[in-house]
Amino acid sequence: MTAGKNALDGQVNRADAEASVKRNPHPDFKSVEASRPDWRDGVSFAFSKSPNPDWSLGDGANDGGESLQKHHVEIDPFEEGRPSVSNYKLLISGIVPRPIGFLSTRSKDGTSTNLAPMSYTQVFNHDPPIFGVGFAGGFDHAKDTLRNLAESRECVINMISEHFVEAANMTAINAPYGISEWVLSGLTPAPASKVQCSRVKESVFAIEGQLLETREFDSKATPGQKSGVLAIIEGVNFWVREDAINADKNLIDPDVLKPMSRLGGISYGRTTEGIEIPRPDFSSEKDHAEAKFLLRPKADKQ
Image (cartoon, rainbow, N blue to C red; front, side, top):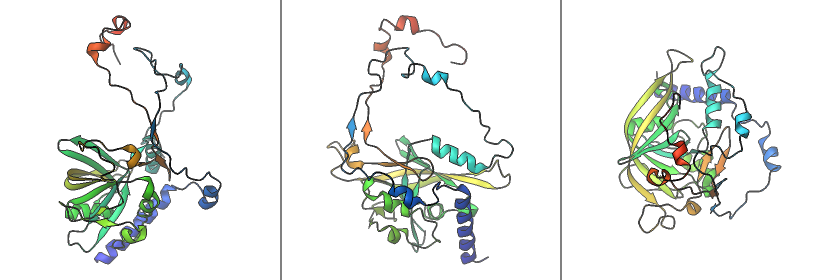
């Protein structure tokens, strides 16, 4: 089978997979968007109090017990007749907000580059810096990002900010292998230092990464098929915009980063407000009056 035929088959499979997800719930999205308020520009990140600043040991939830009056629905992810796409839609709407790893990759021979947002992204360690990126589907129908990453074993993980979210979203297009998402998005490639692929110049924070290993998963819904790949990546170099980093080079200002996250469906989230709650210290908490009634051995199922 020719490389061109493989690429075409992969493109058809990706298009079919996207159609089956039915991610966009709006038949006429532009009409829905036109009915919504304009984007609130110039919104600064701010801190508020926590929901209950007077919370004390043993108080439990801060909703006065309201959540205890609600009932839960139990879902078996593999119950008969449940399509795997239902689990996908459930998870991406419930595990939120999710950071978006905006991956820049390059084929091993350098003839093709790719730029794509990956919302199955998380940091897992700091020494060394370790990141995990998940890909739907196996190597037999690998997305362009995964194909390049597996071949070259390099990438740049760029974080997405408000000022280029539309451009980043465009790179999720199911274009054929070899079509430049850089051109479609209008974003600017900038040189990296320790990897060959480019970083996104517009990104406030970017991580040069080298692939350590991959793990491919067998589908339980469709035995015999591969359902996903986890890539484990080591961060080998950081880039931070100078107006976003502190003097010690260890804190990024959220009011400059203005990170965007993924929610369910086609929804994104913006981070404009935070709260601060100090981490409790047992040596001081145990001396509180309430503690003598609460400090007891763990019981069954606790």
